[in-house]
Image (tube, rainbow, N blue to C red):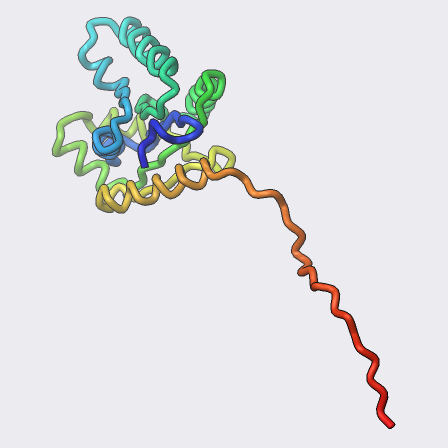
Length: 188
């Protein structure tokens, strides 16, 4: 499935704790399907000014939105409020928001963070406290941060395929039987 050929473009939002595997999945998915990937954390780490990094991210997103191509976005989407803001923005630009929640256990996240030296314990704990799990209204695709990329991608592609199928008209559950012509039989 090529995301650029999907009938309705998606704004894929990566959600999960630091160290869950969001960036790994997003990079792999982006490469496999030639979908743009905006990693706001990468931009902010390489910017001299935090306000400038936010502005650069917004500019990238605005340019991508003009293409009407499915894209992947990873930001500090720890809170439901922030995800809702992004979903409104995406819908306003003609996109269908799709939340992918990468969900390993906390110990795995901590181990990955320590191995990568990307966060200290205090900042990881703060991120964990500010994280609000997606709820049923957000309709997230939940993938395990411990599964292989192939398994994760299959789950996401199934949802993308489902959301792009034309909806079928409601049909009557009652089975219609063809009219049967009965012959009168007389026994003598």
